[in-house]
Amino acid sequence: MKKMISVGIVLILATLAVSTPALAFEASADAYVAVYSKYLWRGFDLNDEDDNFVVQPGADISVGSFTVSWWGNISENTGEMNEVDLVIDYSTDLSDMVSVSIGNILYNVDTNDEDSNTTNEVYFGATLNTILEPTLTVYYDYDEFDTVYTTLGVGHSIDLNDKVSLSLGATASYLNDDENGFGTDESWFHNLELSAGVDYAVNENVSVGVAALYSEPLSDDAEDIAEIDNESTFGVSVSYAF
Image (cartoon, rainbow, N blue to C red):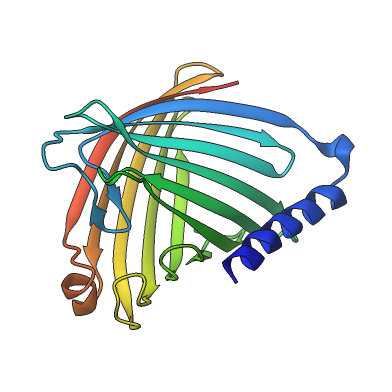
């Protein structure tokens, strides 16, 4: 079943590529590095115990509607990269009002065991191109954990001047568990995330930013089973667009 899903993702992305006019392809790329007070993901504090901060480099390459992304997390204590994620994404506008994205995330996490803990997640998202841009995204781990993570988020960006922009966002999530995940076969409202960031364009290619993220559990199950708590992180980043 898992192999069928993997093949299905490849076939869908290949079909989309063939159906997109080659002459419409435009290429772009960017690279960035961020330093955060902790590694916070879906409400989980994933910091190594002795880390005072983490370094998170990444890069994106876009050709037409396709984007391939690489992201890493480096432990401050060990200086080693303990996670690498690879993402392939296809995003397009279905109409003036609706945009969609489909893709796959490969997580490669070093758990200090002999083998890395690797899994895959497919996702589908739809955005209404209106005020606050509400976005519904469903992530399905079809590899190791068989869990479904659904998010509903809103966001808004404000240009304060020609060089400075402010971004605000809020996202609520719902988790469908499986015996391969937390082992409960239950579902619960998972976490609420509030984010804010300010970006400054140094020039056409280089920008710097500061960002903050706050997360809190939305149910007793999220606290008791997933064992998440109120968490926050903040950091700075530098990016270069090619």
